[in-house]
Amino acid sequence: MTRWSWHRLVLWSTLLLFAVFFLTPLYVMVATSLKDMAQVRNGHLLSLPTDPTLASWAKAWGTACTGIDCGGLKPFFLNSVAMVLPAVVVSTSIGAVNGYVLSKWRFRGSETLFAMLLFGVFMPMQVVLLPMSQVLGWLGLASSIWGLILVHIIAGLPSTTLFFRNYYVAVPDELVKAATIDGAGFWQIFWRIVLPLSTPIMMVTLIWQFTNIWNDFLYGVVFSGADSKPVTVGLNNLANTSSSVKEYNVDMAAALIAGLPTLIVYVLAGKYFVRGLTAGAVKG
Image (tube, rainbow, N blue to C red; front, side):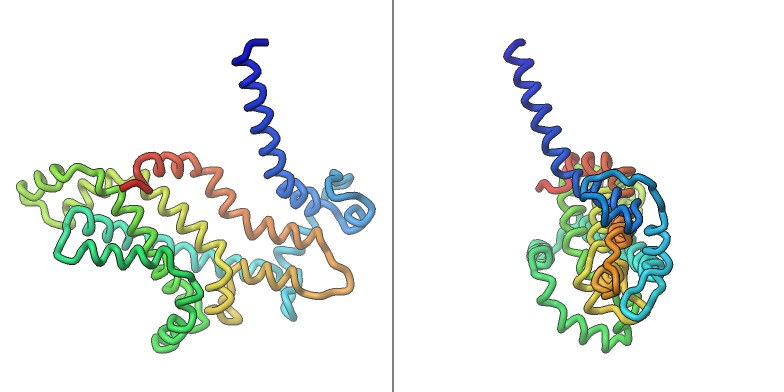
């Protein structure tokens, strides 16, 4: 065997080892969710289900108890959908306009403003909990879906602005100048020239925002009310609800239900995410 073949064998073996290491927890969750409690008790962690069933999935979705409420994850899941979609669209849209202004329509103090926005990327989320609670109270949005949407829009603006600004810096200024000479205005240039070039960074930002907002727990548990809790809070309540028998299969099914949307997004749009990053999403 040649030296090059040995290198390839070692490389692929290493990659396979890491793949098995990272996929084992997912396998355990899927396998456990397809077992009944008798199989869970009598088998071991890595054993395959002998009689696969979706009963634990049905219970996790519709009848599992989260505290004193036994309505499953369904209402929490729907709350997350109602929260995530507008928050992602609005924060991405505003970030695109911010990035366009800060890269192609610079004004006095624009760099200072951009630096202040960047500060929000690195600021711990816990810092804003108390002032944000006061603001939501003043606006009458406390403990509501609309309050959570507003929180996530504000929290996402630094990241979305950073992504779009760094991407638009690579767009030639001559395109904007030529359109200005031809009589195009601010919004015409944005809609007809800049935005059509933004597909890669748009996909990056949408995936980034969707993942961050869907998986958020801190804002969800602090700012939500009894009827507006997202799926992450529902999953936590379900897993920590005491009962006579700990149903690990239901817990695993619930965790998979909660994580399924982000998994689907990455499977279907992951290649666009990589293309967007390599096209300049985090450069500049």
